[in-house]
Structures are given as structure tokens and as C-alpha cells.
Length: 552
Image (tube, rainbow, N blue to C red):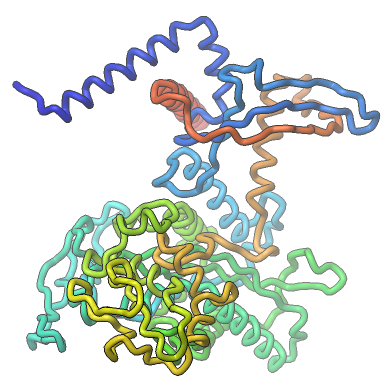
């Protein structure tokens, strides 16, 4: 058998990495190195820090200890990157996912500093979807017969089965009788790319956080008005909200939220109190439905859309009541797992993953005539870029489309035949806008929202957080991280007499560390560190299984 040159190069590279790993493991300082990198051993791209660290007694200012990274293995400290994205770092995203699960579930059943009576508070789980920007290929299972949705093998309905063979204005048939598999790449792509509106979609992604803010405020106002009508002090009710964003296959964001009704006392504004009687979960459902109907706004004008885009929610709205420690359509465990799962996702479902794009890298991912995601990225780059010259009302400048701009000559403008039809300068090079100066403000003003489209082009326009919550909903990620630090220090101190917690002196840690790089120094180091982390996880799993068998 003869191997191809590429396969031979890969084999030689893997052999070289194995030899480097063996050489590293044979060194006498290998045990110290493994112990040194343990905190970040499972990370795909750890942060390397160099400098000095000093521990000072807070009461007296006495220097207790000092350390210099120059005397440590590799001369640096390895710190886990902490990236929440599963596609970027599986190890760190797994930690983030577990923390998100604890944050969400504590807000539903209590614990970790949250009072346990929150389990009796009314709570609902609404899903807010985006409107349609054109018909796309879908996979819908109307009736599930499987036990677990994660391993669903139910037969889906036909994609777009119609009795009449519908034809769009571009002559394409808007019908599809295929029963798409979950891994089918055609899912989420437009049935007619010319009918689809990528500009409106990326603008909706960009403005979705503002739409959510207005919607959540409308829900709060509805509940306060309802309390006033029923003779309840509006100031005695408060909503605690948690939200997770999910990117759909078609490249548009939608939100899953938890809305919990609490009571409040002006004298103790930070405490979580039981809500007053008279408002239940069904009232929260009505509040969500009302807010979705009445909430909407129009974006500022843009050269492509002088009247702005209208921002509203889609027609599909699902709001279910959460049941705690009981059987039901939506339980606390299901909601916590669902939101924690999407807290670590990004754009992977669309088939696109990339870092932040620049002028030199955007051409790799953006194409006005390419795939669905390439069209969306091109729309972000086009709408978010200052492409307007300074000549005046009859500027005769380049068109707004990125691909045209890249191949056009300087003014006087000459139309091109190789690019798509210009959507702005259609009057033979004459600017159709009344004032180019006003147009330039819309695309070059730092305060205008459109500049953010380029910043978040790699996220298809969405620049919000994938997991957010109100302050009173639950604990914070910082509290969970601090608890882990205390737990590690307790483990390091060893067993204490009578099960007591080791006393921690009040100290001040002063670090003079600077960033020197990211990632492991070599692929061999990455392989050894990740192997060590995998063995540690396997040991922990076997220990849990052993303890479970003893308890049973």
C-alpha cells in the first residue's frame, strides 16, 4: 500500500510528537511539571503568565511567602482559558456548563445561599422566537414516540409538502417532500436564496437584545398593573429572570427564559421573599403573551433601509409552567439542563465557527453568492461598513456591496459586470440619497448601532451574552468559583481533627504577572497534559461509581 504525500507528512508529524512526549516524560522534572500544570491540564489553550507572587499577612503587612515563575517549570504559570464555548475548549466549557446548571437550578429549588422556599414561587419557561425572513428547510417531528429526545429516532414530517406546486417570484419551487435527517446540511438553508432577506436577519440578531430588554420591562409593567387591579401593592412584587440564547440552524437567535415571581420588602431590597397571594403562574403566562404582542420598535435609518427595520418577535411563542420536584411537561431539572446546554453553544449548529473577523480574513467566510452563512456574514460586513465617499449629494462613489467595492476603481465610479447588481447606486453612479453627509453619519458615527455588525460578523450579528440573569434570581458564577478555590485549599490542607475546616488566615495575595502567550509550548506538552487530565477524570468517575454502589 502506497500512502499519499499528505498522509506521509501527517504520519511523520504524529511520530515526531510521540517522540517529543516520550522525551519530556523521561526527564527527571516531569512529575513536578505534571503537578505544576494540573490546574490547566485539560484546557485546549491555557493562558501563560510570568512574574512574581507575594503573600502578605493583612493584619501586620508581614511577607509570608514569595514566588517567582522563573524558578517554576517552563518559567510560567498555566491558567485555564475559561472559554465557555464547547467548540473552543471542551474542558473549560464543561466547567461552565456545570456552573450554569447550578445557577439555574438554585433559582428554582433553592440552595447555595438561595432560600429553599423559592420552589413554591410561580415560575414559567417561555421561548421567544424570531420572525421569518424567508422559507427554509426544516425538520419537524410532530409526535414523539422515543424515550429520550437527545437520541430521538422518530420519523419527521416532510419538509414543505404542499398540494399546489408553489413557485416564487424567481421561478423556484417552494416545495420539499424530503424527510431530513438531523445531520442533513440542507437544514436551515433558504428554499430560495433570492427571496430570503439576510440584511433583516443580521439586523434582527443585532437588535434582539434591545427587543428582549423592552419585552422583559413590558412583562414587569403588566404584572405591576395586574397587582394594582387586584388590590396588591405593586411594590411588593418582583420578577427574577434568567435567559439563555440559542442559535438556530438558519443562523438566527432565539431566547429561552425563566421568569419567577418573588415578593419584596423596601427595607430589605436584596432579599428574596415569598410573593403575595393573588398572582399565580397563569398570570405570568398572560403577561408574557401580552408583552410579545405589544413590544416592537423600529431601528434607526440605514442607507439600505432609510425607514429602518421593524423589530418584533415571531409568531411561535411557547410558555410552559415549571413544576418543581414533580412530574410535568417542564420540570426544574429539565429547565436547568436545557439552559446550561445552550450556555456553551454559539454558531456551531450553522456550520460556521471562526474568531473575530478582520479586513484580511473576512473574504474567507463572506461571499454574497456563497452558502447561507457566507451570505449572512457578507450582510454584516456590508451593512456595518463605512462605504460612503465625501464628495457630496452626487457623490458617484462606490456601491455599498463589499464585493463590488473590492473590485471598483477610484472615482469616477465605473459599474462592474462581475459583481452583483448594486443595491444603492442604481442610477449610473449617482448617489440616490438626498445628502451623502447624512448617510455617512449613519455608517460612521461610533454611536450608531450598525458599526457593531462588523464586530460581531463572526456571530452572524448577535453580540449579546448567551446566558444572563437578574441579580435576585440566583447565585453568581463568581461565588461558585470561590467555593471551588476554598474546596481545593481544604483538600491541600489534608484531613483535620473532628472534621473541622482548616483555619485560613486573613492574607493578601499580590501578583505582578503579565501575559506572555496562550496555548501549550508544544503539541507533545498538550498531549501529556490532556492525557493526565483524562486519567484524573476517569479516576473521579470510578470513585463516584464506587460511592454510589456503597450507598445502594
